[in-house]
Length: 471
Image 1: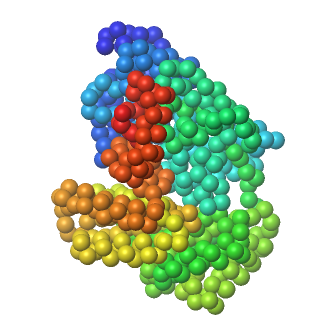
Image 2 (image 1 turned 30 degrees about the horizontal axis):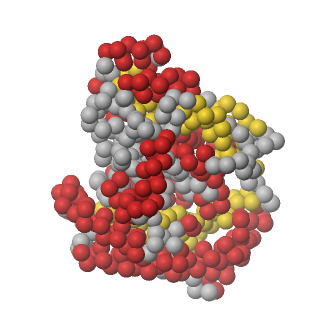
């Protein structure tokens, strides 16, 4: 190890190689404080060339690497194990915006760029970078791509994969694949970009990316809508899709329990709708025509929904500040859960045609088996992505409840996901949290194909081992 440490110091200045326990601590525990590990060192490269050299050195010494960005993930995908023999390769120093191509409507960025900084750089040039997450002030684009992050604009713009045109990746051998092409059509064999996006650093380390930009909308209108059931919520979604088509940017669902928890910890985000509705829907339309055009369209759709008995109440934001407050209501649910204490998270996708039956049936099963449990269900309902989270009953010791019931709760919910042909991971990835569930979920053939890819691209198993697949 002394030889490894000496050679590592020949690649990076010693101040960018952290070995002190106190210095390493923030990099060794995930955002939820669910997973903690012990690293051999935290390595902070500033260039792709340095990443390449570090990986080559690790391959030579058979030392595993945990790639890390903003460390905001929920599944422990960027946290080292407890062996003390892995290095964490944090890319936060690789934070440069390399190019903005106005004509091609693309932005080329290093993996350590904070998502919000990319959004702001695009806006300064009159463009929209539509990937938007609750953690956008600290998450990094490399991590977004590694987990194929979704967020609030997926309905119109797609996941991180859909926004990516090209990548630069360091392989397990330390070789650099330069695929930074801003092409929307490139039908030359296997799509290596899609192979690395969503692989959580297990097949290669993303160091830079070419991302799509879109013209900034001229007008945006946001509304909160009350519905009595998921069936009515789906009907409302269908109505907006039919009448507004591609102008529909966001369609977020929040249950009464979710917003009650929100208000408990953040009273400034009290639901303005009447009667504490079972479901509150946040809808956003954006367009390149006048504000009057979008406002009129929104009012027409809401009037039709009232007439059809689909919605019970609606509030249209009358200012940008109020629209931001509506979005903060949605985004603070996760923070409210963190304030409340430990909870069991499930990032799942269900086909829209089965969503009503899934929620009604699963809610019933949960409450029957675990009396008093709180179901904090919210998410990007427009694409079927639910954050179906479970909080212990009021007054119950949270740690004890979760320890005693976590396995049974996961099995119940994941069993329901399988029954309704959904996915156990919609946008947060697999990491180490869902590693044990992946084979049964994907099936033997798919899981074995994934393991074959891992062995082919990382034969020494040094890239984020025991995340996603275990070989």
